Image (cartoon, rainbow, N blue to C red):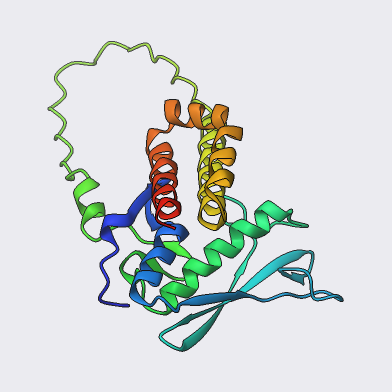
Length: 230
């Protein structure tokens, strides 16, 4: 798995590079058609997909590749990588997909873009290219006369981009969930119905985040071709 090149599947988010779980799992299945994963369940009835830890949650996933199984764990976190108290089903599902990708990293997949607990690395060389060259500050000229006072304009207020960041995050989460369902849907009718039921959201995605829309469209086309061959 270490030799597999994941660079064509690298995407950007908040200045970091990462490989989505859908692409990571597709690469794994292409390398080992018998690859599989298992989600650990907890709770009194064994029906909770996470372990309760001091008011927060931890998910566990086993990934088996080439008959070798590796177990991975990951807290259920928000977009700031902070643990979530009492997470909902969507947040747990997102953590499970991240945990799946991390377990694939333990198998060696994408280690060139993965480091630490679950923090993706910038692509080698990019950080150096993006950093502007340091310029030496010009030496002040010798003072010959006292300069006239200069009126200082107040600095413009910083724009609050939290709303834009939240909107982009929601768009990414929608795209990931949409792709996840398209991968597991059983029939062409189900695929078509799901696309139509989300048409308005997909139109907005196409208008504001065309790259995310193209990912959804690409997976939908691939699944449609699979159904047509069956």
